[in-house]
Image 1: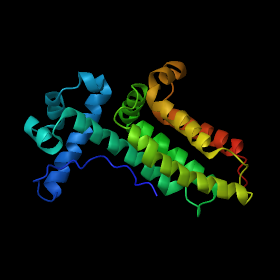
Image 2: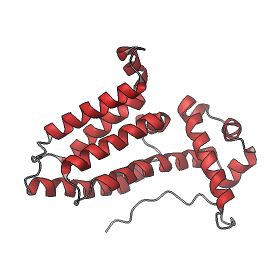
Image 3: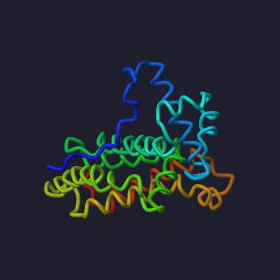
Length: 220
């Protein structure tokens, strides 16, 4: 069995066990770094800018993460881990397909709304060749998609949905949900200022869910 890929530990070798202050600092740094990387990309970002955004001394960033590249890897890991956890919570054998798929779509859209920068950082990394996350994509992500695909295949075998290529179903869901983060400027331009964000995401959830459930032939 392949060993799941994990990014290297982020703590310095001589660091003490993390407590509440340490967790608070690392969470603040990751959130600030996500905002800064989303605004200008990896190359334009500066550790001093991230420190100012986090309200912490620059020395804290170097202590906890070492280099800008290591911090960027940590941000990517945090983003992907949240996405995978959402998938694992919904795409499970014990859930009916309609509940599982609609719940997962809702979770992905909620994340796109709450953390649009996260999706843009991930998209930029992929467009740049996925230099830092390719081992993860080819290892852990592939493994997790295989596990979820087995659930989809089981539903089809039980006659709960039509036969469908599971991996391509996930590609479609990711594309349809993450577009509301990656291309939000286009969406806002088309819908106009009279459409609120609440209305946009409610319509998105209803439309994407309808397309997926009908496209998969989900039985009631």
